[in-house]
Image (cartoon, rainbow, N blue to C red):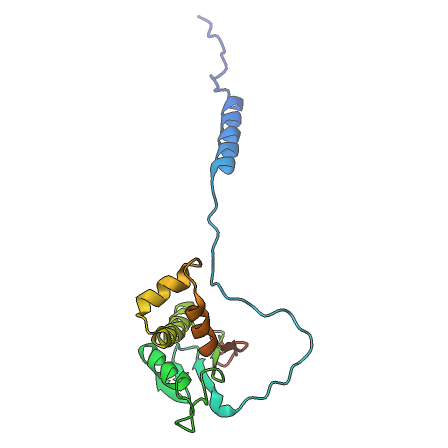
Length: 184
């Protein structure tokens, strides 16, 4: 008996490639890609001229975070939980202590980090500094912090008292270029 030579059965894969391509197009069109919002920080306009700003040393509240996430505030080691109260005390000094600011309008917080500083630590310190300003402004307005934040977040409710508090206690934060002291 003679065997017939038959070729092995094959599956036509060309239609599978078409289906895969259509699925790829479908997912590319229908997928939404989340974008990071980041921090809402208003950067100053680019200026090539070097400005020589003279400030009294006593009006600068120095905060440094090293690559080990240790916090050095006014040359003293401090925890994140203590930064808010130290900043509030410095900003609202009104010239009483000769080592602190002369007034809230003159007070500037200088924040410096290291390239190895963790992002979470940086954000935690920024939050504490912002809380200090918010609490001082709320106290200036004679409202609770929750009421102040409600006014701040709702642009329709902003009133003259809110603007007056912002002028009386301006949020002045200076961020220096990160250093590379940690070697990371």
